[in-house]
Amino acid sequence: MPMLHVALQEGFNGERVTAAINGREFFSRTGVKTRMQIGLADSFELDQPPGRATLAVSIPERGATRSLELQLDQAPLYVAVSLDTSGQIQMRTSREPFGYV
Image (cartoon, rainbow, N blue to C red):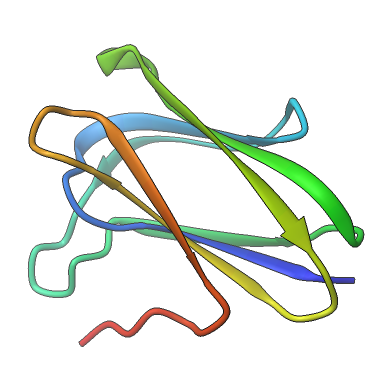
């Protein structure tokens, strides 16, 4: 099964973060805060069946939600989630793991 890895990166300041795949919540954590030294707040991964999937990430305290359509195949997929300076959720994908110092 394909592995989906989600990294909560820049801009988190102690908020509650939730994530769902195809409407099913699989991650909920409070106090998510970016470690400035490495640019990472938290991460999680899960195996998903191949095919199309929708990843939705929410920060309830900010009233922010963002969804991203994904095409999962046998290769791992990495998704970076950050908050920009206006508090909006930004997402990007990669087939390679993100690097942290």
